[in-house]
Image (tube, rainbow, N blue to C red):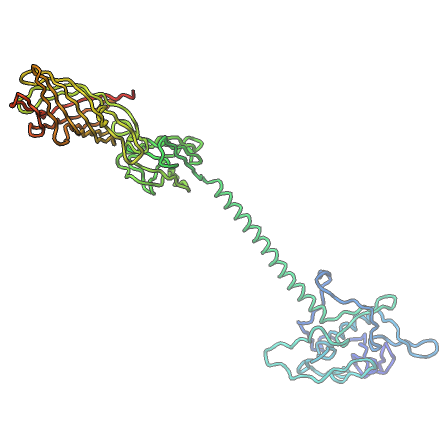
Length: 499
């Protein structure tokens, strides 16, 4: 008869466990005669598991008396004593087997189906009841065919799922299987989250680096800027007219690049080909031609790389002579004051013969857009006396005349209209006094001309006639005496003088 090597109770033949204390016996049946049962879902934690991520509880809680081997003291009483290492290993195997059998778990358990019965081997549900040992509850229905066994709930609600071993010195170290599995899951989840955090940080760093790179790229691209200088202004706006130039300076263009000037976004008419220097600087004169429409425009520039000035410069294009710009061919500006000293020659009408003479045209500048005013020195509304003679008899005459004028100067063109306000003629023939006077005012001269070049004007003139019916004469004894003014036409040239 075999006996339990722990408590000494008699055992049935080939019994694996003691029916009294439940201890596994050292003489094990050949493994080939047993059906091996394993649960792949219950695993021991590897010794290399990261202690900071497992959260395994190590408590100093005494194990139930059923987990300790009884010992007989000197007084014949049975005492609990530590077990040998072989016993502890056997208990661990027995604990694992019990977990496989669905016995020592907290909460719902699973009964392994169709386990073979071996004589002397305690079956699930028939273990002896030891004091302090939790008993398993009712077993649930077996799982469906092909499915896995459900796992015990984690964490366990009591000590029934614990197994352990006794350390030297009497302290029992115990591990909770549920805690271990949960800790492993926590480590996996924590590692996954940590990876995401690392990925996010790397993404932020990369995004920041990309933004910095893009910013650096933008900052290093050419950002050209231009300024416009002109001696002519409309208010504070640079101005120009056909025949003038706008002086352009620029920087931050592409180096040694062809520059295109744009007027309101379109290539400026008749713009020359200019280029920036090696440092991207620009200095050029942009000529304004007659193809530039008058008005306000926005001037920009771009290089061959397509880099355009972000801010345009407002410019005002005016007619020649306005804004103190030169008139055609370099004529004096519209607001300039000057004189034109002229020489004229022509032919009187009706065979009156040739005429010639000199005169002065006075141009008085006025602000735009009026242009200059043109008159001759005697066109001041004051009486002026001249000496002359009659054409057919050569009798000396004295003529007192009052003139007025209306004349313009604009864009290099000059006009004059002179009006005879009053005209009184007196002569004395052998003591006889004869007087004639103009009945009504009228235009006596018209002059037109323009600036040609080199400070010179030229043009034409017309003298208007005043017939005898325009005068009234007191003839005295000469009832046949009368007076009139010849008409005629001619040409003139003049030079500009600022005196």
